[in-house]
Amino acid sequence: MDVLEAAEALAMRWCPSQAWGMSPFGGSTVEAVWERFDPRIFLRNAPSATKIQAAFRSSYSLPRVDAVAVGTDDADHLRELTEALTYEVDENVVREYRQLLKARQST
Image 1 (tube, rainbow, N blue to C red):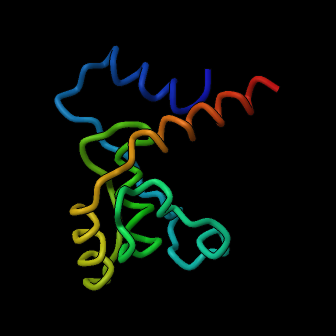
Image 2 (spheres, rainbow, N blue to C red):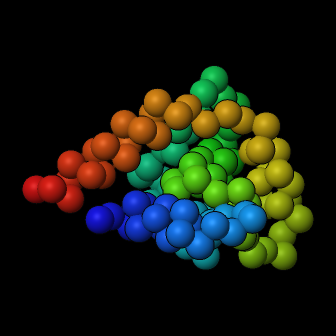
């Protein structure tokens, strides 16, 4: 069982009123991974979204959660994340991504 499936199984057994996720940034939005990876592929019709917005918005779907915990003392960063909530996640892309992760674990 992969981490995403395990998290979802735990939430289903626990049955909380809300499921919270962790920030996708690992403590920093300037790490090299954000130069190499473009999370905007997970959004539908969002050409103006930043990579940070796309990572934050898509983190609500990997696994599915109601809220995402972030920590910052930068008001501009919080504003950018709040604006990200207007974008839609492309569930087909998320499903394909999860299938790729699952296939990778099988090898």
